[in-house]
Image (cartoon, rainbow, N blue to C red; front, top):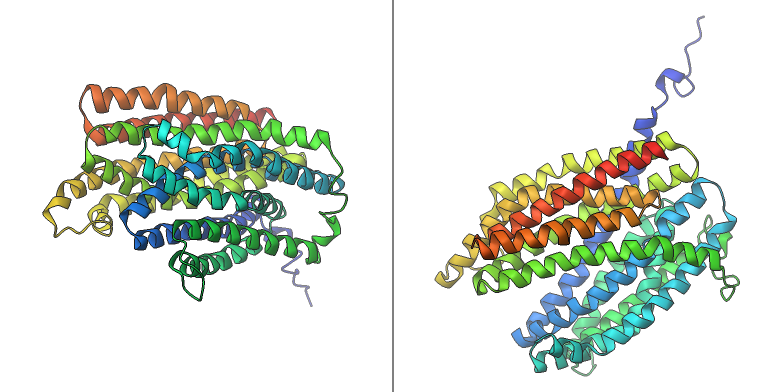
Length: 461
């Protein structure tokens, strides 16, 4: 009888490198996307519950919360080097370097938290100097001062998340974050409103709740990596006091440009908001609604960007240059195609989205709704190029290329975007839509340059 070839061993039925890349990238990217959405749910819970306290508490909490986020994003940008560095070590099978890199990542988190914490501690003075209402600044300072206690645990949580992502183990991160959503809501309910026998602390209670949740989530994830059968071999806390200056230097060298690029992107949106604020209340409210919609959509390419950094980094560390290029291009093409769906939703259902935020039956809201719908139409192109640029950035981080992308983002956002926004929106009186068109132009320039740079670097490497 003629032997039938084994389906598994037959070379014709083995998955191609592209098929393997599809499975590996998506299995990493999807949980990371869900984790970012879960993190957004925690922030949204805080905002909603602040609204229950009243408009003044919401204004103070949001103002100080954005100030806190500015420094938190900077710190996480520095620590964003941990995943690509670990991915290179894993790809090259330098397993002995893993513990030292994670340890120095935790050290770097504590170091960068010091200046950030000092700035956050003096929130009131800084906000008043920037022209904000003194009573709002004072209330907001009490809120973020309570949050400072969770700054280091929150950054350590981020380092541990980078460690798990580099090992292609993102589900534990998602589980811990989902638990954090429930714990945050429960702690807010108890401490903000004085339930379950706790005193009513309002915004201070929200700050204590945030610090508590960050600490518990950090301890939970640390417990997982210490007892997991495959991860406990690293003994991450072993010789924690021992310095590894080379590893610390590499994290700071790769991470500082990431932090600057993150702040440059945050800054251009803040500047756009300030420009639109000079046009009146309705355009500013419309800008806030459209920006919140984009922030939610951004979680999806954000997860793909993290996955691209890990997949490209592991391939580059292994010296498989074709695989590094393949991982980056698959992530880029996938996110560009996937972005067409939210783009269609924004284009065809913009008004239905906006009325979720504002009551269309109230005449005073009609002008804001009209502007917000027009901004979401601009966002149709906006979010596609935004998705491409963030994934290209992640792919370049996988190659540990961060200085060039930093210069590209600064030039694109501040050299192209801000002048164009001021020219089109203010000087030519194009309104909020013109400012958003300028931002879309800046993002398109950044996306194109970062994609070309990845093409050059992946081929050259």
